[in-house]
Amino acid sequence: MVRIMQPVLIDGVWREARSVGTFQAVDPSTGSPLPGLFPISSFEDVEAALAAGRQACKDLAQASPERIAAFLERFAEGILGRADELIETAHRETALPKAPRLGTTELPRTIDQLRQAAEASRNRSWRRAAIDTKSNIRSIHGPLGGPVIVFGPNNFPFAFNSAAGGDMAAAIAAGNPVLAKAHPYHPATTKLFAEIARSCLEGPRLPTATLQMIYHLRPVDGLRLVAHPLTGATAFTGGRPSGMRLKEAADRAGKPISLEMSSVNPVFILPGALREHGEAIAAEFSASCSGGAGQFCTKPGLVVVLDGADGRDFLAAAKRNFKAPPSGFLLGRSVLESLQASVSEMAREGAEVLTGGKPVDGPGFQFENTLLKISGRAFLSHPGRFQHEAFGAVSLVVLAGTEEEMLRVAEALEGNLSACVYSDKAGADDGLYSRLAPVLRTKTGRLLNDKMPTGLAIVPSMVHGGPFPATGHPGFTGVGFPASLLRFTALQCYDNVRPDRLPPELQDENPTGKMWRLIDGEWTRK
Image 1 (spheres, rainbow, N blue to C red):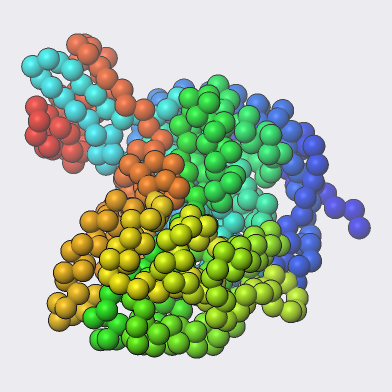
Image 2 (cartoon, rainbow, N blue to C red):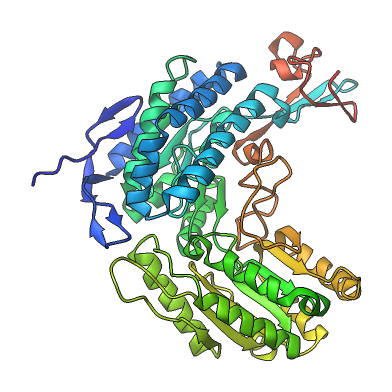
């Protein structure tokens, strides 16, 4: 059977790729290749897209926030109109359930993100305009002047898709064009999003290169791309090894890069909470860890309890719960192989496998729900070896001998996206909490109480970020509008510039009446 290679989207035109190879997506439930042949683009495609993106920067700089918002809202409506096709395609490529995961959870979130990004663009408060009337110095956040490269992850084919997800929405809302690099696990899904986006650009009269899309690159060309002189910034969501290579290349070239890489998301369950409702917490823990086959960046991969009767009861309940649900399908063969390697490494270092620990016999890519345990003393002997993200339904329980040892475990943690503390309602845990929370506060972007970390509310106050190695910079968030826009901006100052030459947001009159500005040290809408 002759397979036609799919085209790439460059400067508004679906054209044949200048490829250096091809690939096919794989059905994770069977391990079999799916129909459709996709190109691995040469750097000629990359350079053509970057050149078009640079021109689009100039045109977008002249586009009103209202036109950008109109595109994002049209895009949201276009996705809604092709929801069934998107859900079916993503299900084939990822084996994620059509309901509730894709249809009632992730696709509505993606649409909502686009609408929130549109509102942020229209409101303009994200620009953080600052005006000092005495010195006549004014500053504002603005676009970068180069396209934003978005590398989407394997686990969210909608909400973090390079051509439709939160990074793409934030970059465009901030006035930057986007070059989307599809993930090879769901290329057809990304192509559908790019088709919808392309059709939505004409009404608001935005540049045809506002959104461009290629499927795949050789690793060496990915490094060249993030360091290219025409690149404005890069957004990457994925594993730490790839993220670190891209960061090194971008840093060497002085190019901004926003990274979300890995996190074990520690959960500390204090003694009073264990006595009060330890079995219920064990059920929440197992459900959170096994949801989506454990392929969430906020999955609880490390749990710390005191070693005692209540801690052992919790461990027994967790073990039973881990055995109960069937293993879900992993997204690809590389995920399965990496997961098996992570579990084997922890076992070699002294962790005991309580249940699971090996691939599931049968079609597709599956791995048993896996629970391990280790003493606090053994963990502290080599803490770094037990903090590599195991991307699947795998978690390690640390049995700390004393409260002091529990605190030392917290001190030994690397940076994480989230950290959680369960404490009792009567107040018996308050003293330990008051010592533990300040330690965790410096180790994580989001600190939770009495709930598992999976699941992100898309609200302005949400922080999906944290210290290295969870991300590349602790000052930003990849989720939540308008804060997520700031990753893709440049801070621009105007010193004694004549009023008619200033951006509208820095002129004396508030251009929207709703935009917040810092005027002579006071945040105001005046």
